[in-house]
Amino acid sequence: MFTQGCFDFLAALQLNNDRAWFKANQHQYEALVRTPALQFIEQMQPHVFALSPRLTAVAKKVGGSLMRPQRDTRFSNDKAPYKSNVGIQFRHFQGKDVHAPGLYVHLANDGCFIAAGIWHPESPILSKIRACIDENPNGYKKALSDLNNGGFYLDGDSLQRPPKGYDKQHPLINELKRKDFIAVKTVPLSAIIADDFVEYCHQQLQHTQRLMAYLCFALELDY
Image 1 (cartoon, one colour):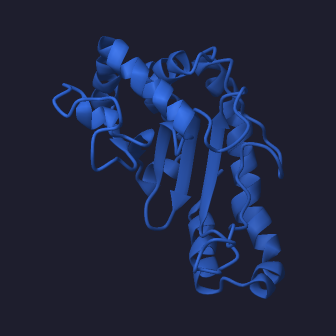
Image 2 (image 1 turned 180 degrees about the horizontal axis):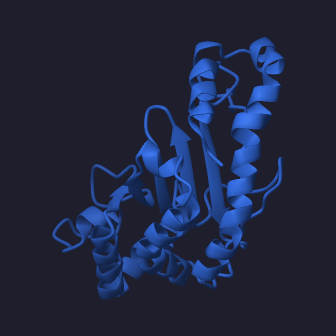
């Protein structure tokens, strides 16, 4: 499935990030990056469904679990047209975009990781999660314990001050300040190019189940 060749291509793309080079080397992208990624998604499908039948694993070139290689440069000073990483998301079927609760696999030369949770949710969604943490702190603490036991940590942006309506002395104030609820675990390259990477992901992501279930509960989504 994934090989060192995938990472070699991503490194070359980073050095030659323009449309002409990508078009001339698209056969390598197909062979070393996209085809292995689609195979990974297909093999992950039963494992993803075992974690939750509400998650999606769609092995399609466009519109599926594999994120497109093109960058959105409209609001960025960096106009490089392509991403130098591979992003794969198994998101909740009721979510319509990258901001839905889901599982994520990130492959890049500057670091690989697996993740679970919700990234950059809109304000109404964030308010629901905060209210749930305030009203149901024990369930959230259990989710954090599972993450810690599995070697995951919560990452993402946080507010500088307490969110409106919450006291700075709240026992979970640092959690309530979060703007992202993403559990992340760094993965070594050796695990990614190993034959059992699919099984590895399934085993590791089980530690994120309480968090995923908690977030879906907070947002009134099935899980």
